[in-house]
Length: 622
Image 1 (tube, rainbow, N blue to C red):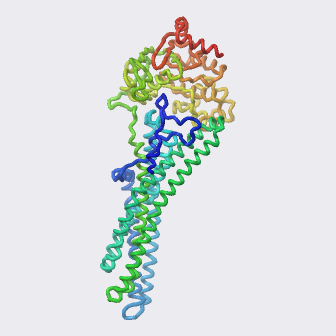
Image 2: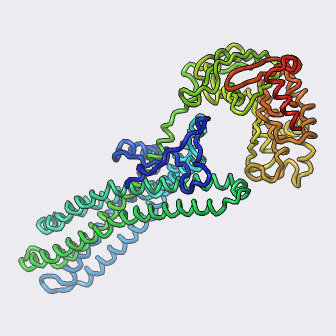
Image 3: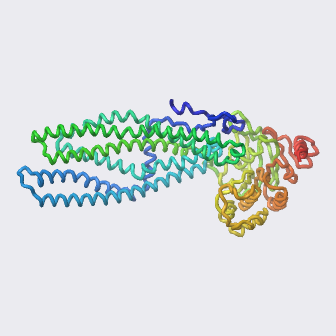
């Protein structure tokens, strides 16, 4: 059965993002659409595109490779003919007079040719490896750079492991093709052409008799092409799923252990691992089919060679030396034929990988600069949302006609139940998504008309789920502005009260932290994210549940620092802990994508509406 028909489309939750199956339904976890087998014909245009990555190195190194290739091929094809001369002229001439001097001369020439062939092969391999590694570097670099530019909705639909496998496994699978495959293809083609010409020149009757087996082999081998290609695509798909599951399992190991689901996780991984093994076995079995096919065809050719060759010797049309040379050439003939079969398989693997690589490279960012986009001037901070409608998926509105007027320097708090649209507004301000209808302006400029980089570089965001990169504490803070001095880094750390705990670490600011900062508490990671954002000196500062993981004592220190740091900046605070937003200039209460109330804390409390109810509910649980 075609694997694509077995693939279960991912389910959708109410946010329009993928989710898994219900707990307890084993073996029914979601599979992403991009993991399906790509059903396309062999695409020569795509293969040409893949090989275009060799173009920058064509003038520099390719002439040397071709020179070594021609030199090696010529010497290899000359040796059998010299061997025939040694037999017919020196060892067993027609007149019976053995010539040792001629034998020594021919032997010396053959020895020199073998040395030349060895040197040519050594330098050819060296130059092709250089080209191959540079091509792989360029391809992986282009893929990574492009992925960095893709929009949030691209990552919403794909697990991190699926993206990771494109950059690593799929690119790595092309390594052999570029380091040896392409040049070997050229060598084999030149060698085959040379052998065919030599065979026909030596004895065209015997040459045709032997070569006639090639079309038979070609017809049989073509029947395997489609099956082999689909099999290797299936292998890539299964490996991608394993990588996705591994990434998910590692990231969620705490949840797995907390709910004692280790055995279920192991069982599910074993099933995926076994599927991958079976897929590889099938592809490998088909792949290995070429070898025996070539050997059988070669055996038939050898039988024809000695049967018909013996007849020609008896008839006086061929000498023993030429038959020996013919036998050597035929042996050399089947060798490149066999490699060409393997090369085709290699091309099939390359096609399966390149389809997946170029699928990502051809993915267009949903959010991109307009052709006439202008740089965003220094932001003052006046922001307007005019009749803003947004849909994560068509027909399901996350925001319904939002109108909001924010003056420069104001602090705006967004509150409401989960799913009310708070984080959606933040995402739209930073233009991580584009609005469906309406308009968002900053200082009178529509944010869709300005260059993304100049817009986002003036917006600082602190999220609840703080990401800490592997590296030093200093490097993590400096991520906010790469040209910052050590003094500036320490200054912002002091401003958010992070300096004290950093100094207590074994290496201070030079302490190495693991990915996601597991050696730090959640509160400490939040403080570092504050320092990182403030170092960037943004004109607009966004705090999205940024104080949710900070204890009360630390929060009080941050509140004092923020009074100074937020001065002169337009800021948005998204918070469930309503005590953190009492001093906001304006509190916007959202409910199901609509603004229900606006005003400061005192005004909203007097109204005794939705905000009052939220405050009352929160205090009842304290």
